[in-house]
Length: 472
Image 1 (cartoon, rainbow, N blue to C red):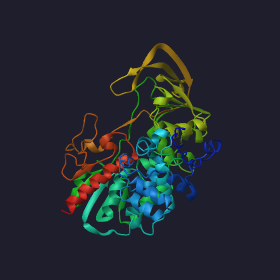
Image 2 (image 1 turned 180 degrees about the horizontal axis):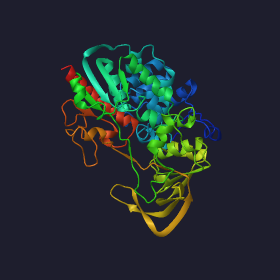
Image 3 (image 1 turned 30 degrees about the vertical axis):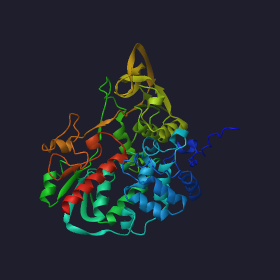
Image 4 (image 1 turned 45 degrees about the vertical axis):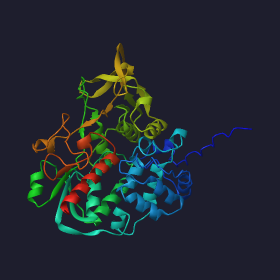
């Protein structure tokens, strides 16, 4: 008798992408999304496990099993309603969340190499189901409580944590005002993530929905300068949420780092994404295209900067990383897209100095080769310099994507806020409350740089606690 072999798992349904040669020259969205036939085919791969592990892998507890079953049944209304029970921004999460490290990583099919494409299905539902009212858009149902003008909550910062908090509270009758330092709302969703990964129209749809729920957006208000926490309480706000992110650029303090042509990734991407620098002189924010571009770092921000440089006409773009390709923290999909488009990698090396001409304009970067030692307690192999092993890279544009820190404008002017040793706000893990009564915080200003969906989870938890207290 022949032994029964394991049944073959049908591979994931592929998603259409723009051709690499074409997309490297334009800012159109790279991933085109599923159509209905593809979405149903992918959803029908789901095992509908009795004890689904995918839900536990989602920072905002989306009932993945249920919404996927509804997609398989072509019930987009039901799927949208189910997702919206816990996820305020599914069109955004479906595009930029690292599902491969969250819900998909714990999918029962993951060991086969073909986990259910949960993120792609979430995006499909959000893109293809159009709610009839703003209330339905925010909650998945048509039930929203009328706004009580006496229950006022302020949010400082308009990124994913604040947008999530605003939607949750507004749908339950709380008046929310969102104060944003820049000239457009959306936070990192608009200034940090390029159009080819997250179209601005997707973010704008979410913001317009919140406006229709009477959420006010007040731009050009810098937390700690043009608006303070004390000011907000004096204006009658019952609670304040701090969701200002962690947007302070980090540099490496190397010789020549102040040369003309060296940018932080934060400034570079903000110029392009929010200030339309790529359309100079139509918009008065010039961005140097660069002929030889070097990006320092190995995360998603580094990939965003490198791919943006290509689209602005760079002759060649190199991403420099001190470990190996397999250890890069960037999403595998983003790394693959970058390589397909022509980005080159320089691994196991790090910059040690920058050199320019007599006018102080960058000309080259001196690099040092690295090697990896055995993994330490963190589980990562430690990179160390190879003594005397140097080489040079020509460069007229360097983009530093080596992380960010907490911007101290708000925290320095609010000494009552307790901070940790790295300058991030200390907040209760469950409620988000800080050392100040009725002042809450969430997202990167608490955790340091993390994912969009983790920031959303923090905003949702804080909103629940604020609502509980306001309605007590």
